[in-house]
Amino acid sequence: MLKAIIVEDEFRSRQTLNGMLKLFCKNVNVVGEAENVKEGINLIRETNPDIVFLDIQMPDGSGFKLLEEVGKIKFDIIFTTAYDHFAIQAIKYSALDYLLKPIFMDDLVKAVKKAEEHREQKDKTENINVLLENLKKAPTEPPKIVLSTSDKISVVKIDDILRCESDNYYTMFYFIDGQRLLVSKTLKENEDLLKDHHFIRPHKSHLINTMYIKNFLKHDNGEIILTDGTHIPVSRRKKEAIRESIYNLRFPEEGFTPTL
Image (cartoon, rainbow, N blue to C red; front, side, top):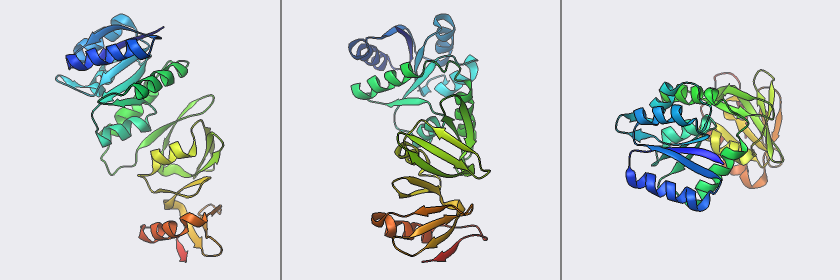
């Protein structure tokens, strides 16, 4: 059984989530509830939970404040929140999970299953540090993201990612310093994560950082050359959209030479 607590200021929301867990997540035992940050911190220290369902907005502060004050994080966090694009993006970049209110059964079951599968990563402190750092950045500053490989957690700057390439259910990340990481997420998942930060997908197997485009060659369907010399194919159905995207981008003074 997974020990869980619910930290949520609305009584009805706590009741609803508790009831859904009893009905649909038989492997979860809710051992306590709290309605604010102070109570949540005390409850975490008393119960040592496996999962904390954590509301973002509460009367005495945010769920993020709770994570700053509670100390070492040895439990999974599933945030519960109304839609907030900036907060949700920060949560995604830190490889943590969230549920949008109102919570649906399928989303809840999926989040609990993911938490159960990731129980071997006991210490979430690195993820939380990335989350809190990104939340304090200005919206225009490039964030950091957490990437999980088979044997480690890596924290990287988005602007240091040159490109990504599909490897079945995995994605190979290539960085501007020549390093590589094989990450246990599909290319589509990583596209969703990076699409707001200069990344485009010219081909089903490739995702590229447009900051590092050097040339676009017109022959056949088109071909992109990156600053490291890598040639990236462009699929027929995406050729016009990619051409338009490239023309609309601001490139460094040195580098991009359009040959469209």
